[in-house]
Length: 247
Image (cartoon, rainbow, N blue to C red):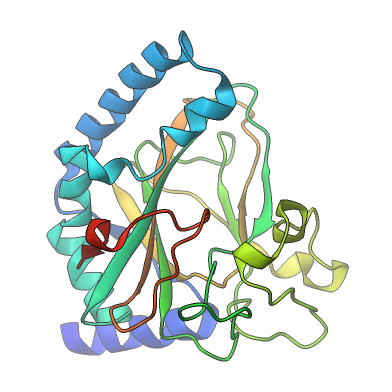
């Protein structure tokens, strides 16, 4: 029965572009990471401008044991191998925080490259690029809930996509302020409890809503590729080959 359920989870994942919500096995390390990042941010905020502060939340898995523990969490790695591929490479982590004054983040996708130095992404390919969202605090309707556009990891008739890889387009090309009107009703809003995660195809359009009220919230995002995909090193990928994490 468990195998049948995972087969169904995989089918849903590939059809709509994102998985159901799962729980990390190690909940304690989530609380520890959240508390450590809060303390660090309070200290950095006194010393650094906001733009530079955001850079310190990129690829922190290189020096934070708590984040490394989440990456190796037994529930997470099990689900990744069942839904995505038996061998994956982590090439980026980001921490995002929503607090009073945080605006929404417009519609975008995470498929920054295709394979090596190819200049266009391929929406017919859904087996090479994946993303993970981990709630480091509760994510609610009022403190920056996530929104997704189901099935947008594949071509949608009537939805014109910019297929250039991230290194070939400007920041303004990367974000959409609004979805085409005929697709707005299809968007789904997702909330999470601390320590929950979900997996999605990197090409799927998603966004986060503005902070309105409630607790500040942090999330960890992981970007992964199949182990046989070529990895281009540029200002949008950053990690060197020896820093890539094999899962």
